[in-house]
Image (tube, rainbow, N blue to C red; front, side):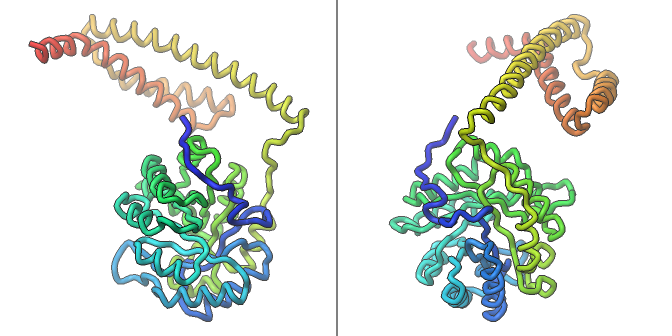
Length: 375
């Protein structure tokens, strides 16, 4: 299913020069006028940056931390723009933020992850944007909830904003990993599938929380055909007031961008498209066979469910499940399939098997319950 949003192409409102990749960069927080303006000049000199970003109001997790310099920072941004020619971008979380940012001539607004998670906040921002022609980017919510992300985009679009983009900044997870926020690329891909014309900008700074991993995530985003990057850059990250570990110097940013391998999107080249079409036809045939075999497997599962029911056996047989995992993962490894992928796939199949057997076991109980309901 596709979602119909009224969206202008990205190159009509940003990146008109076609820089590859589109790059929005700047400090996590505007700290002082000198820090912001000096960083802006260094970023402009790279020739890589499309727009200057800076945090003016910083919604922090806990009180007592630096929560942004406030409205005075907008004047610093205005100066940075005047001296470098870079368009400016700012996060807004209230109607007042929107009004002040627009009054200060900010070129691009974005809605942060915490705001996206709250429809009331998004609607307040959307109401403040009615009648205004300004680009707006919407970060994914803190938790992996595609509906919340889509809903925020719809609210902003319904306010008449057609210069619209999404920002993929990763998702919170209880599981500890190398990342500050898990990328969960599948959620961003699902959004792109719903709204193919929607530009998606990747935010490797917030995904990684670690400057050493920014290049890796940036390349991954480009490989997945995301339209650009938002990377935090500070004149001296070691003394940054917020998120020091995830910021890079303008020089380091230049190295990251220069070392990216840019992939070509599918073209109208007949030879390339014919070859891709041939390979995709092979995949389609294998997919059809996979589905057929899964259906055959579930038919056997139903027979097992009936047998267990007739012989009063429990649905879950732990030893059997352990045996399946051990054997199949070993077999998959020999065929060069990833262990994590194999385990997740087997869990999905196993869960469906349990569901079918549970349905069979409870068929009579369901019939009794239905009779009692209609008695």
